[in-house]
Length: 279
Length: 141
Image 1 (cartoon, rainbow over the protein chains, first blue to last red):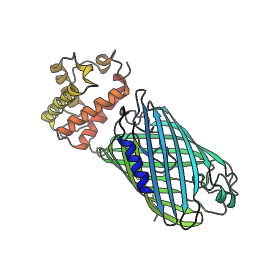
Image 2 (cartoon, each protein chain N blue to C red):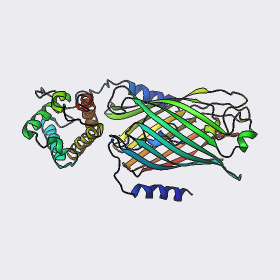
Image 3 (cartoon, rainbow over the protein chains, first blue to last red):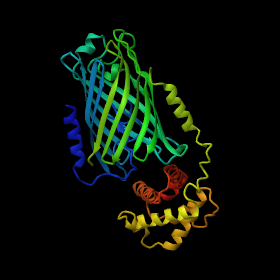
Image 4 (cartoon, each protein chain N blue to C red):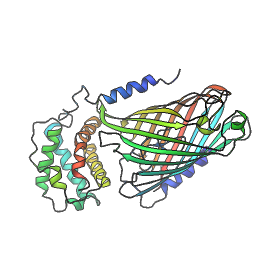
């Protein structure tokens, strides 16, 4: 499954057409667990791909995370226009190891860059976005008392900035995202619960150092709501290495700590992601 | 042991301390001094001349003068003993309608030149950083 996903994604990277390449290497970000461009765990203000100057950029991505008791894979596509708008569609498949029947969720993302430039302006780049989530398998969500198990929408605002040469001559990037959400485990366990029902604001932070022109080392933190009395929910954290061999592909490897998920504590493990931009 | 948000905070705090102690505005020597800057500028002009997208902007340029002024500018912004005596960025770029993407391409050409000249990464980053504030005077006019 992993091999097939990776091969299909890389194959799409080889397809040649006028490739949008008007932005600097790495300014695409990587792809997150919900299909948005930015970090691995959280969307940033960056717009996917390398589009600028009225160009369209198109790409596909595949991510797999493997912890002790669960496996999550995410696959999808992303389009961007003019370094201004990003559209994404992702399918999450969450497997409880040893149990038949994955939990699947579709996530449709829209992001709009409001102001600023990631690289050049002293003000950060600021974008607002939403993630429309549709739970395809709602059995578990219903069983654990989620208020809603059909659809849910997250709304967020992100500020991201590349501070040129800020750390002894090395470029440093930081991101702060503020997300309004009701989603339990990103929506895989429905939206809202018996402990808390309404929208809550969740902060998400990332920071990285560009140790080479094509290589970033970073860290992420994402606070999550804890709406269900049945199952405790923790923050997501990771440390990652992201490699940009070209403007056509990114490979990211992370060690992720996902906390307590559906009753199993201290879930941690490896995260691997490939994003390719074939246009 | 949980990945510490203290680590994230430390990194963020260091990022916000933009005026780094290690003389980030004085990297002329790191660029290789006079010889280094000349090598970079010669390389930059060469990169431009071979680039299909960017060369058209420079086809009528007085190259020896461009070379002289670029050397002055890079020397000055890196803390070297020079004074820039050329036209303002605004004056020299108005009417060209330079796009964001075209500006990025020129940054890449400068990067290529610096890499070929053997400029250390930290010095390359510092030069880009010192030139970045000129962008609003160059693009979209």
